[in-house]
Length: 275
Length: 290
Image (tube, rainbow over all chains, first blue to last red; front, side, top):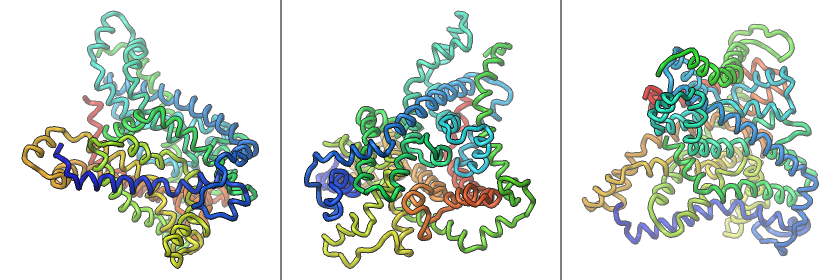
């Protein structure tokens, strides 16, 4: 690296601190608000911190009324099932595409590739009718089904990883009499772990935060976390300081995951982009 | 590799469910959409052919043209968003005290969902909200506005939220690109006595030009698909509706499935153009031949 001059270093900190302020300023009033009492909220400026940082009334109220706990569990179930299924199928498709020559391989790959031209938002008028005919509207299975599909980004991540697994490993196992399925299960799959983590992080964040699909398919009792938050937020009878507390509760799970997986998230996302 | 019956069975069994899923939930819907866009289908009665009427309506009725005009704001704000993200990536690409803190904080917005971000920015743009309070505190109270109710300002205001929300993604992509530059290039530059500015100008920028272009196209395809922020914050009111909000409205509230299909196809074509250009730049298909 070229030596960084002193002025460059100063400029870096000025800019980065500016960026941190840019990130934090919109969030700060939300945090303040979540700890304010109703009368305090209406009488003080949004920029003024709460008088009592230990006022948890809003949080208790949000948990009790907002149905948020149940919704969070639903989101957990949906994520666990659909991500596992998706991961399994993505590794299977990628293994076959990477290690075998067969008629129709180009066609299959192209079919997956071209889905990147078909945004989810342009197909839902018809997909909704299909889900409706399957009798899955307002059931968790609808969202699970839609999330479980194999997407091309996942295939790329897996193919990159497969490039790094030597084919000699497969071949020596084959000579030892292992079946291809055995090779997939005991050689390929364990060696794909880093790529699997990357895919889990990318789609985990995406699905946890998704609002469009669950808002279309889960509008009744069964709700995901984003839909429940939205219902809560859309109800004008709910005092806004309670909404703020609920939103803050919504940030907590993703921040916990983030703190534990920060390194993976950063390099997973940046690495996926690179690949 | 050897092709036995067992191999074929394995290939078929590993592919059949994912490919079926793909056909049922992507290809059949998009093809049906194309067909239905030329009909007056309402979800109940058998569709009747109406030719290009839906498309004509879309491109002549000011109410619908407005939808696409709104998207332009989201493309406009992508420019400062990309510049900001690029400068951040250049600064973060290096070794310095506090790097992990900055990296951590900077990608927080990207991890938040649309409902959370909408709430944050309702508070931000409210009459007695964050922005107006700051303006007043700075003695600029005359600039304070009803940001979400001023019909001239509401679209640029809510479009600018995407700078806050998505710069983190662009930053990660630029950062990934900068990290991929060979260290030999930097060493050579150091030996030649380059300044930091020359390094950025002659190494960093040319090396990630490709990624910059991909980001621009991503922004275009993202802008045409905007849904969450205007839907959650304003339910598309005050002239903030976007094509995707209108698709949902037409298909599910007004039962105008044919019209919604036509609108879907227009969005689809714009995405095809943007993503298609991006693919031309970024050839990846060769990977399965390797």
